[in-house]
Length: 254
Image (cartoon, rainbow, N blue to C red; front, side, top):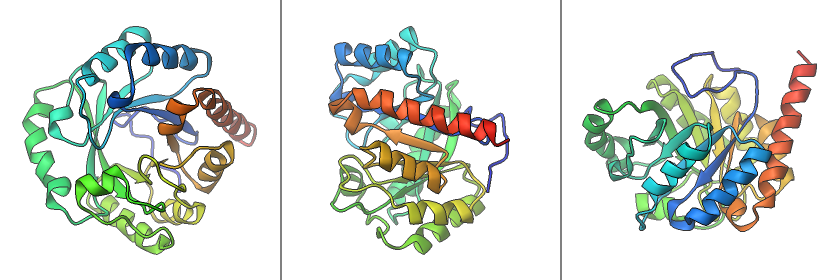
């Protein structure tokens, strides 16, 4: 089901596909960030997501500053804690970990974040965050103390997403986590796409053009690539080209 055009949301264009580059401050230097910015000038991305499940360095503020100085691409925080809120960014994915049962990540961190966010100019995007089993434990599942949804249980994912939609969340994010051995299955993406009328973000384990294409075909509105581009920057150009080709095809069929 296509999502409704709500201008208060992240600036997605309804009926089109998008590409978000996830930047982990622990894995970036100023030099590597500037290199990725040069690549993204030649091969456009739609969003920079900044954050990670465990941030141990002090690089985040500097990385966001560079992004804002050298690019007009929206910078969206992808936080694991209220401590990682940075008002330099354009917005924040306010993640509620609806696949788990740990109250700290369902509401606890949100209570701590609320006064900071209310005092900032950040656009807040309430997001139902769902961890999906992709073959091994990831940092996100370990740090959150939650079990991911089984890889082969699309019905559980669909019902969880429906619950998030009924609770008023505005986005659904299916994430295999950093270093996933396999991506979220096309079957699961398709089941969630059929279950909810919300923009759907999918990431984790997308390390080939074929996997990226499968996620888009199954119904992902945004694909998120992080780890693999840090190791193979040329993959950015491939994904950017793929998303552009999808949008050309969508325009032709309108």
